Image 1: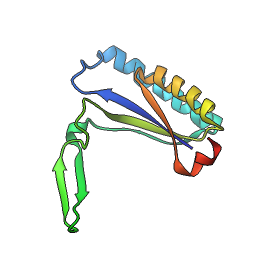
Image 2: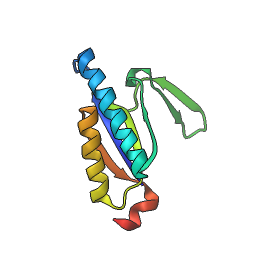
Image 3: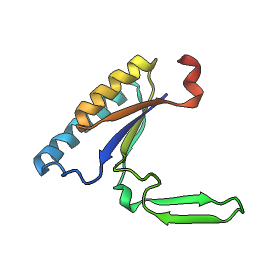
Image 4: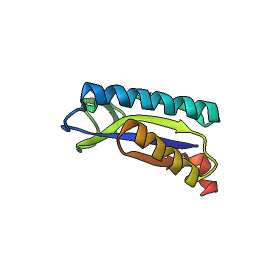
Amino acid sequence: MYLLSVHMVEGQEPPSAETMQTMYQDVDVFNKKLQADGAWVFAGGLLPADVATVVRTQPDGKVLTTDGPFAETKEHLGGFWVVKAADLDAALALAAAGSKACQGPVEVRPFQDDTAEL
């Protein structure tokens, strides 16, 4: 199994309403193809990183929560797919189709249980 994560760049001008509609339609088509092909496990879009809450357990056992993203970066996770793919090449092909559909970069990462296949 692989995580296909979609990255969004903070501060980047958002796409036009027409482009967003096209992206939603293309992602819907991609999702339906994943389902039809048996590769679909789970997927979801995320709200912007500025609404995130970070939870940290301190060495003394106290739990600290803070507003905002964990990483000090302008690029954040915007959504993801969890897919079944035969190997990395198959996952990369799915990521290419997903990237085209959502018009953004998609990172491919295998789950730990699947590392024996690498």
